[in-house]
Length: 516
View 1 (cartoon, rainbow, N blue to C red):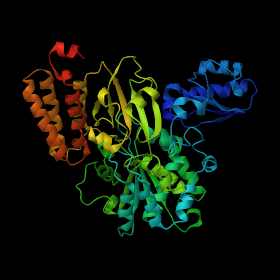
View 2: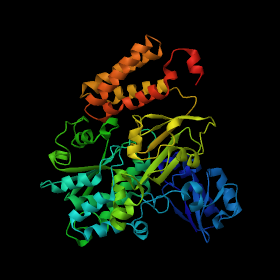
View 3: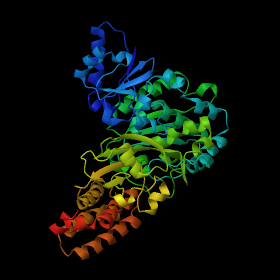
View 4: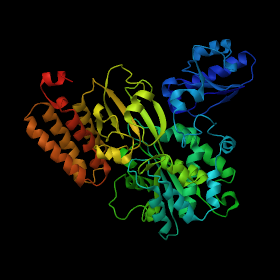
C-alpha cells in the first residue's frame, strides 16, 4: 500500500514529519506493510499536511492531518480510501487543483522528487534527449519561438539571452540559476527545487548544451536547507546515470553543476550582485554594459535565469515551442506559477496560463480573505510591487496589462490585505526595506530611501502635508530614473501606488482615516 506525505518545507512547518512518523508507527503496530513516499506539496497549503493514499479509484486525499488523527484514519479504512471527516476525495478532482494548467508543476506532488526512476517514468529527461538530437542554434530558436520570458521579475525574453551567450566566443561559458528567492509571498522556486529538482537540473543542462556552456551554478537562498538536500541528491543521481557531468548520455558533451549558498542579502537577487557574490566578493551591483551575457561570471559569457524560467525549458524542448505558446495572452506566453499569500482563506500555489484575473485568483481560488473582511489591496511582485486597489482586480495577469496600470507581475507572488491595513505604514516599510537592503553603490537608492522614510514620517504626521507629498513624489522620480538597479528603481512602486489609490491613509486627520 502506497501513502504519500509531503516533505516540502511548508508541509514540514505544520507537522508533516510527525504525521509521516505516526503513519509508519501505526502501520507497524497493526502489522501492515506500507510504502511511505515523501513527495512535494501539491500547493494546497491550507490543507497541509495533505496525505494521499493510492487506491483502486486513484489517489485519495485526506487533510489537513495531525499526528493524533492518524489512528482514526486507519480505523476508518483510509488505506482503501474510505470515508473520514478529513477525506477530500480524489486529489486531482479538488477544484483548486483541477482548474489549473500545470506545465512546470506537472510532477510536483505526484512523484518522489529524489527518485530518478520516478522522474523518468513521468516524462522526465525527454526534453534533454530532444535537445541532444538538435544542433545548439535550433535549441535556442525553440526557446525563443516559445515566447518564454524570465520569470524572475524582469520578464526579459529568455531566448535573446541564450542567443547572445551562444554567439559570444569564449573558451568558458556559464549557466547561473538565480535561486535566491527573497521576495515576500514567493515560494514557487523552493517548491520546484524540493518537489521536482531533476526538472531544474534538466533545464540547466539544456541551457548549457544550447549555448556552449560547460559549467553551471545554482545560487541558492541560504534559508532553503531542504532544497539543498533535494538538489544534492538529484545531482548525484543524475551524474551517476549519465544525465549530467562528462559525456552526457554518450553524446560526448559535458555539463558540470554546483550549488553555492547565498548569505541572506536581498540585493543578491539582482543578477550582477549575484555574480559578485559567486566570485567571492561583496554583493554589489555592477555597471552595465557590459551585459552578463557577454562578460558575466569571472568575465565570461553567462546565462542568468531564475528557477521557474529554467524549469520551463524541458517541456518546450519535449513538446515544442508552439505547444508552449498556445498558453497565455499577448506577449505573455506559457503559464505562471502564482503564489497566493497573506490574508487569504486558501493560500497556495496556482499555475495558470497568463490571462487569468486577480479577482478570479482572489475569490475563485483564494476564497476571499481569511478574516472575512473585504479585501482592500493586494501587493503583486514582492516588497517592491505596487499596491493594487479593488478597482484593478479585473486586471489580467499579463506583463503589459500590469505595466499599463503602474504595476508589475514580478515573480508572481500575491500578498493580500483586508480593509484594516494601513497603506501609509506599508509605503513607509518599502522605503525602510530599501534603506536596509541597499548595497550602497548608488546615491538615489542609498540616500533616497533613507530620506524617503523621513519624508513619509513628516507626511503622515501632518507636517505641511501638501509640501511633503510633493517632495516624496519628486524623490520617487529621482529613485526611479537615477538608481543603478531595480532595488532603488522599483521602491517607488509601492509608495506611489499607495499615495495614488489610498491617499486617506496618509492623512493625520482621524476623520479621514475613519472613513476607510
